[in-house]
Image (cartoon, rainbow, N blue to C red; front, top):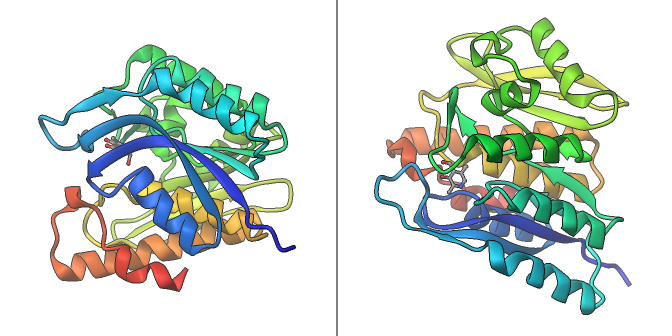
Length: 270
Ligand code: PXL
């Protein structure tokens, strides 16, 4: 029997804003993986929208995972992103304890453009750093990489050589890393990657705006790609090309950046 990979996806569900579970579910589905959500919080809209509601789901998360274990389920990947409380990082580690053969992919969502997201406390950032250091694969942006490394955001890499140094530090010789949001010039944006097989950086055209939710789409495509058997380098490339296309169609349509990108019309290309 040809088995379909299963992913335990631990993120928030934001009703509006095209991020987290609302992108992880369609992306992983279209890439042939079963995405089983563990909702970390339920929001009316992402935290980019003033007045967002926030329902913390911490109390549900261990029981959900424990039930899955009791059902005898196994997972190919545990994939975490935006988390909603200080305790939830330990719950992701609990998931790994229950399903030890799963690849633990942590998108250490904490902030962007040098700013920490509104709902994140200093303790949450400490716990997220600890979680990231225990992961098999991490997909930080530059803001998150700076927090994990304890470096000022102002020192974030702006060229290939310094990006490779950050990648090396983030990998600690064992974690596989994709670093997003690398900008070496005005008109470009890109990524870097490192694992035991290869490392490098790549730049693509930048379409005028930092669209919200693109980090979540990037990480979801990378997870789908790794589960299809791609190398880390190829997973990072496919994720970047897809996000780039999404940004291009959204830019051409003239949408506002907080609303996210028009990934829906491109999903079938994955
Ligand atoms: O895209 C990251 C993200 C995920 N989830 C929520 C967010 C954000 C970024 O603002 O607010 C709720």
